[in-house]
Image: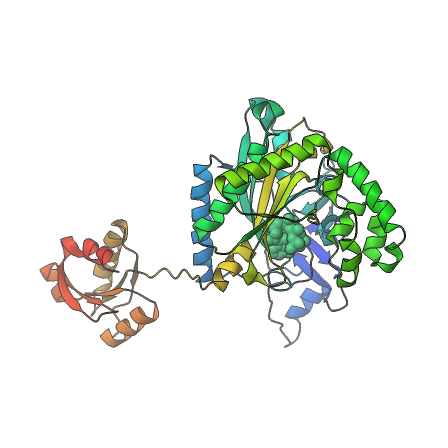
Length: 476
Ligand code: ATP
Ligand code: MG
């Protein structure tokens, strides 16, 4: 991908992942401007093309967004109970942040990032390579280091929610712009950041989160990928084991076997799986402290009754993980079954030239969480409580005044228009999913009481103004 900044708008030229992809211009700031030859065609002749959301991106519309918001509200409430606080990091960062933390050989860095060369606008600026964030932990760690949050001497329990970007092959549950809910516990070792209790606390919190948003039947897969020293020995064992068989594997694995053999375990190519199954297991290469750490995490999970299974092949797709790694999966998701993933990253801060700051965190794929909830039949259509129907000329101001008062009293309300006949008001109220219709005619205003009809039961009553809000709120 190439790119530049024209007229203050960041523009990137997406060169396409495969033949099937049309090369098109991607605007990372949403503005409709002509940026390429392809786009300028839009305005020539009669053949106007309809602009559509870019491949791998999608619009989230009501009522789905009601479910998204309900989930996010529940998650924010839960984070507060666990004393997590929000951090918001930029959507684009220096490219090096990701290559140095996530790792050059990972799929994310080697082929999925939206990166562009950002030209300098003034002599005082330097051109630099920028990348739309593909994940959030690296940005959180950069902020932790930049703002010296470790100097506080306490654990930083941080969460964030927002879009991430990876140039992947779009399919159900896999998008190029997707949303994550991240949470991280980072701190100096003196604050207890290395303790297995942190791992267990995070895992217990995720289990509670999934229960509270109403996801049933999730499964937790757990592993330990050891520390840096274990990994040197394990990588060597993998190299040795791969030597006689690697020529039968995919091109990516052949490269990884040389550069970063652990990544071979991440391979999704079906033909490679029988070979991978026979490779040495990480558990045989954990040193005593790592073994004890992992055993302590498991003991605490058993104590709080969070069920899990051990998956020794799970190394996760990012290089910074150490010790505990985990994934929560759900059967309603098909091939993209991971709702969330995470793990410990004890050396991440140092790899970004920061102080020693062990940590553990996770990222929920919010798109997948919503899909999993919807696969269980979850919806969140928030019905509006009242449809205020002005009846007759001059009634609009009265209807607006009543709606204003009701809304201020906590009742959700829509308003019709005085030009509508009563029949049309009823139709629109029902179509819009209102619970009640409130008629605002001259007589009602004069008498200070309103005709209120329950649209589900058909019951109609006269309600004095003073009792109206309570009446509308009480009935379901
Ligand atoms: P996968 O194996 O599914 O590619 P991953 O290991 O790349 O996942 P992480 O980088 O750990 O995933 O991200 C955490 C979570 O974010 C995943 O478990 C998934 O729910 C979600 N996720 C990752 N990539 C995408 C994507 N392209 N579209 C939608 N959700 C995604
Ligand atoms: Mg991935």
